[in-house]
View 1 (cartoon, rainbow over the protein chains, first blue to last red):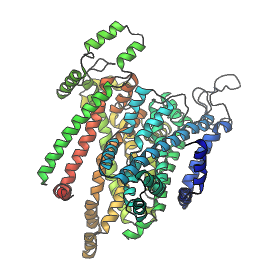
View 2: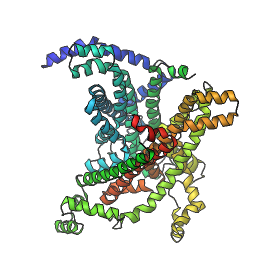
View 3: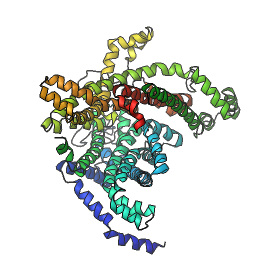
View 4: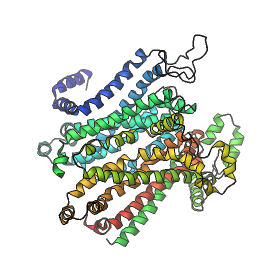
Length: 307
Length: 332
């Protein structure tokens, strides 16, 4: 297939139902007020990731000196330095703003890996069934048993402590939840008449999986993308805190590690607390957004049923 | 399938799984790049010395002989020597295991007790404000990275209020004094309790949300069943009603308990690092940094064994509480 053919396919797929489904999915996501708040905060972090380095008041890598030329070590918050300085004279506010970028990037890449693997395995296992399902699901069970932080820690020390490698290792393990959930939904979808009709017209298995099943699990895929982003950020920060991630990529996890390594977590709270809070809020917002979305998607029926 | 047969089958499965985990880990670590001898060479060690080192530790023997030797050694309680400290791994690890256990087991058990009680209360108050917002803070704290919860505790209770020490299990100044006592006496001292409270609280808060949420959902489900209705119309006291409900609703919570215990390992590592707690997680982090393979491999095996045995135990307990699991298995 040539380049122009691919471009044609992409442009013709623009008004495809998959986009309609996605648009609908995005709109249902923000139906409630709390969902709007959670998504709003996540977009805020994303914007920080894009523009943080430009709005930072100081150079994050510059060791600041006072008027007398002495290093501004562990200065508490002031008007000049809204969040104070670190023990080496770095401006905390600037580092916080710059640190959004690696954190957001890690989340997005991790989420993408997770949902790609999870959807592929989930849809294949659910639709094909039989021994394929058995093998894939036993494999998923196996991955489920892995304590992710502990394994990732060892893999990283042996294969190199990079920033991206930490994200990829997490992505290669954390797809397990989405694979299970998507499979169980596919099991219901494949009994519906439109799938049977597609099969009766002689559509191939891959075609049905992509054209008929995938659009129908898209809302759930979006949910697990959100959870995947949160999970990746959470564990990546943990690995950074332990010290098996490249310390020169200044994410929030690394910031907290530096404060802890300096033994100043408690006394220089203006240094350790802001990245901790930003990190936690980001993770909480992805998880809560997923939960809220689940509530909206299931139509609040749980309450009425049990009453 | 009779209950006895169910137990026997699960026992055999468990032993088999332990062996699979053991073997898998052995080969996993053997094929890892960058082992200790490579590191020695990279740091400029004399190749002759490295060869002698390999000869001495039997690293030149065929893999199956190494495997067999390791297997027999583990069975006889010998997990090898730490490369970094030149001490038997077991000697280094045994008190650490206890230190971690004493942190995680009471922490999570307490979280489950507290969470079950709170979850039942929230669940029976269906539709109230408590039901709507009562669990939210717990979920928030539970979604925080484990080290963040710990750091916030340190900032508030050690730095601002100056109530508890920031790190360690025994203050550095009193190490020598406690070294002379029997090993268990340190756990009975006030010094230990003083250092224990913050990490314990961190573990508890971190895992409080799951039992609470499950208990709430479960109790709502059970309330809709026939016997609950029957209890309501016979007019027995609210407390006894709740006791009956809780007994039935606790099954899902019991299932998740070992999952939490195993899932908590990652969080435990982080909490131990923050508080500099001399537990197995801290040991592992230190060993990983210097690639002390015997320690890493043994700790990994411990983790795997812990997960496998926890799952085995819950199946057994579940089989006793709910006979449908063991006796009715053949219908499936």
